[in-house]
Length: 269
Image (cartoon, rainbow, N blue to C red):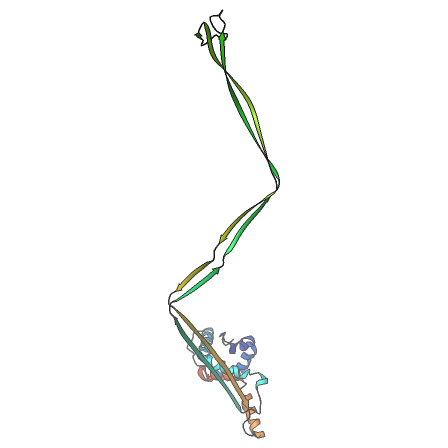
């Protein structure tokens, strides 16, 4: 293999390098490598391979473009076309606007009319019962008169002697516990509560300070226009000459081999 150089135009050679190397040896069998100051043949071969690599690297752009032309799709190749124009246009635009707004106050007002709120509650017939425990205390006043044959009245207490008679008084206290039960019956009745609210107005306001609004935009417009055709009339000779010229350039790798021989080989092999 002449070189393992990595490029699109050289890939086909690396795939079929045995056949291309055979062609190279047939074309230049009478040539020898210019540099001969090597101790062994392997050293000379290695140096030649490095030289080929350097040649392909330096001419990469030229060979890549030639390869692109030579592998042109058949649908884009016309023997009658002598005019091919490609026009590309790209247009970019941008815009920017600024809007400044001053201070503004937004006021809202809501009016509510007068209204009457009424709450009505209907109560069914019912009976209320009240129970109370009461202790009743009773006191009796007792008056006694003693007969003449006694020193004290029958009560035996607090007596006063009046004209030969003895008068006396006393009291008697009694406590009687009892339970009082009071029952009140109510018929069905309706309780109504009315609340009258007058008309009112609710007002509010919001104040916004100064602000600046920015608007910007940009766009790109592009198109490519291609014109391919024939200007004028081509004679059969012109067509054949164009065809021959085109396909003679198709010998792509043979052309590279020729360039290598010019740089690194000389007759006398």
